Length: 413
Image 1 (cartoon, rainbow, N blue to C red):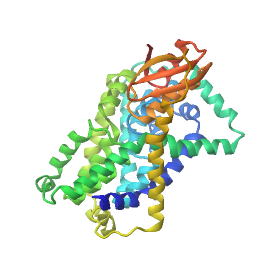
Image 2: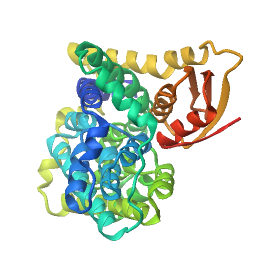
Image 3: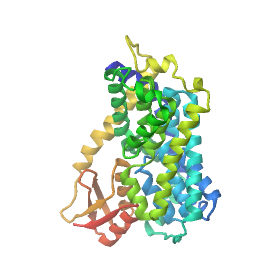
Image 4: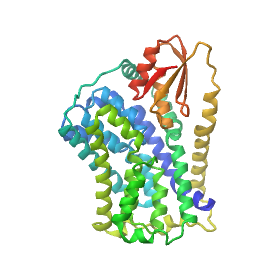
């Protein structure tokens, strides 16, 4: 099991690190408010722009919610926001690279194409048939964030540092836990599940896709973390289309994200959001199994060896990348959180109960939003308890408003 785990990690780590770097550069050098201004209006064009924007961003199904809500409140239309919500969690620069490394080029190409088409269709449907109030509000916290971006515009190295911090600290903390879970599940399936366990499902692809869909929709897993699980299932006999259903539906939606979308954008938009993901996953799964050449999706001997490693030797460069990735995971998932818990907070600090946080990315979004409130001198947000401790001479209403603009609810304790 350790050999299988290490060989899969070595196959993925160089691509994941490259993806984190590109994601950090996109996050810092592409202003969110400017993006939102291009996503106003109805029809398929804003939906297409939002999908093209969302495909390379490596955000999970709940981590994308604060970003989408902030963009909506900066002027993005309801249809464009829905398109962004559908496209973004299904894929990203890190998961595209990692998909290529483990599953091959066909999966890596079809995955973002499917996310793009599904998102445009869902966003267009919302824009055309959901005629709810499409006005938005622009809050002070978003204006302050834009102004901060302008102040940093002349400091290239400062922004580059921010990009590296976001890519290799914030983003690793946001998806790192689910990447570890995905690798562990894949290793367990590879080593302990008999090769003929999925024989019956493998003979009927549509049945296996429906089972995968039932499991994937409520499941919470990031786009990168789903890759080793899909690889292990294909090696155990399930069809490539079934694995693709898991790759699309698993990262795209979960109960928490559906609930928040329904609250923020309405029941029709939420139904279109969920329906587009389900129809898109099944549709592209069937296309892969019945219309595209199966040799495109065959797992090569090298990739299969990543899961059936016996006497596995350690190539230098991938092993170094794996060591760097493990170090980043250790820091973001353990050391930095222990440091946050021991921050000095004065006796005058106030506590707030935050609802809707589901992952470290949500935690980071809340922290950053509260830090932008005038008078705040210290913030500690605990993901497990959902409590935020805010220090400084600050109006509680401003803190609650900042949390709301980040896409969550808060009340003072």
